Length: 125
Image (tube, rainbow, N blue to C red; front, side, top):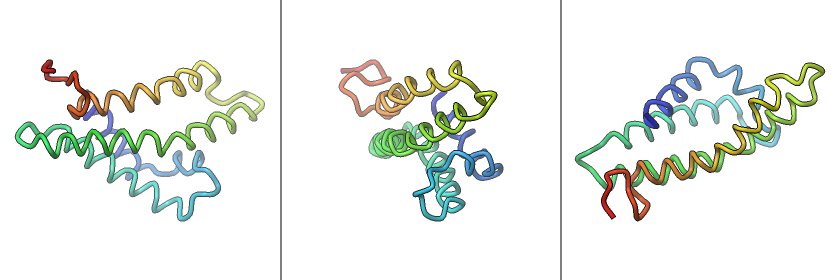
């Protein structure tokens, strides 16, 4: 499921970059390129998680997607701030607060599914 989520996100980043431009922090250089590269990273990470014959690739994908989730967190903060500044509050607190709390869960899930953690998704210790 996590691989599917990241694959879908990667496709959206590549095919529909405009919404992502609206949440990009102003300090990020070449935002269009960064959005395209994040799409590629999501697709590569999703593919890596699905590799049953290469545990090393699966672990690398887990580490990569965990790092990715940390690196995109500033965009989530910018999106929250910009939405809350709008008169209609954009997507509102009901969207943004859970999203903020789910980001660390995405980091953990990437490490778990990538079989990086001591108690891996395969059920072995």
